[in-house]
Structures are given as C-alpha cells and as structure tokens.
Length: 221
Image (cartoon, rainbow, N blue to C red):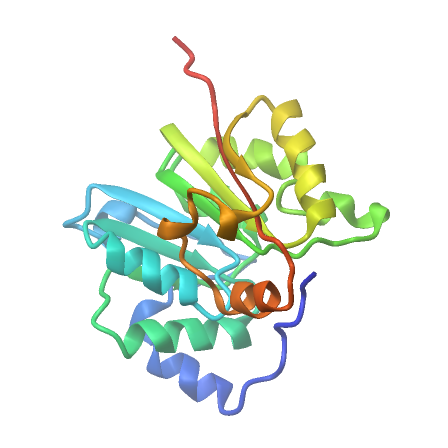
C-alpha cells in the first residue's frame, strides 16, 4: 500500500517554526554534519526511524527508551509537522527531526552511529521500473551498513507482501542475516511489543496482514 501522506498542512510554516527546537536544519546544497553526542549529551546510544510519518511509532519507541537518542527522518515536511507537534506536546525529550531524503544520511551522521534503523511502512514503489527507489533496494541497504553500529539491526515492517518478498531477497543478497521474520505480526509472538502506527491500525483493521523482519550483519571477527 502507501503513499497517502502528502496533503498540504494549514499554516505549515508557522507550525514548523513553533517546533523549531526539535527540527535539525538541512540544506541539500550545503549539507552539514550533525554530532549525535552534542545533540544528545546524556545519551549513550542512538536510533533512527526513516520515514516517521505522523509520529506514532517514534513517540512510542522514544517513550519506552528514555536513555536513547532518536532521529526521526521524513522527507515530506507537511507530514513531519504532525510528528514534531506530537513530540512537542508530550514530555518526550529524546527525539529530533530531520526533513530530507535518506540518501543524504551518510553525509550528516558519523559512520556506524545507530544501533537500530527502523523502516515502517515505507513507500513500496510498486512499479518494477521504480524498484531502485525502495528503501530496501540493495543499493540503499549498502548505505545502511555505513549507518549501523557493530551488532546494530534494521527492523522493517510493511503491509505490502510484494515489497516484503522483494525485501527478503534484497537483504540476503546484500549480506544481511535475517531473524524474527513473520508474515502476520499481529498474530505472532512479537505482537505484544509492537508499536502500532496510524497507518498500521487502519490497514490491519481492513484485514491486511503485517509483515516484519529484523536484519543484521555478520560479525567481521
């Protein structure tokens, strides 16, 4: 399924400015590095969600892990506003937002910065000619290797079975080891710890099964 998320938000610029302390500056023509240590001086580990949507997942996972610093990436600014407002209106202090395409992340963050990369309901780009745009296409998975810390993991879930089947192959062809794979998350042993996104709740209620996997790289030793 996806993408249904790009409706223009009323008073978008003012709302973005009101959440300014949570949003990292980004200029594609002049990309600056971000120090996670300076951004989260009291945190010892960091995680990133790529495609945070309206923020249900990042809100839930950040609340569960107050000792972790979180980066929430969303390339559609009008969608990111909703997620940023959700964090601003809560007591959560360990999330910062970044509005950019995932291809720029290696230029922004130091190598091997993140112990987790979360990919939740990414755009499936269903046409075969658009396969290279998928976040689980092998070229992007190679980029993620540079972002993952030692023993880091990618957690991926989607309601789109075609995308999931494609991703299983791409992960394995890219040298990742897969574990905790399920084709029906809500009926699985991992359901109890699952944070349900707005999108997930909607499509699960319509009978779509949620697919999930974890992927990690083999130790080099």
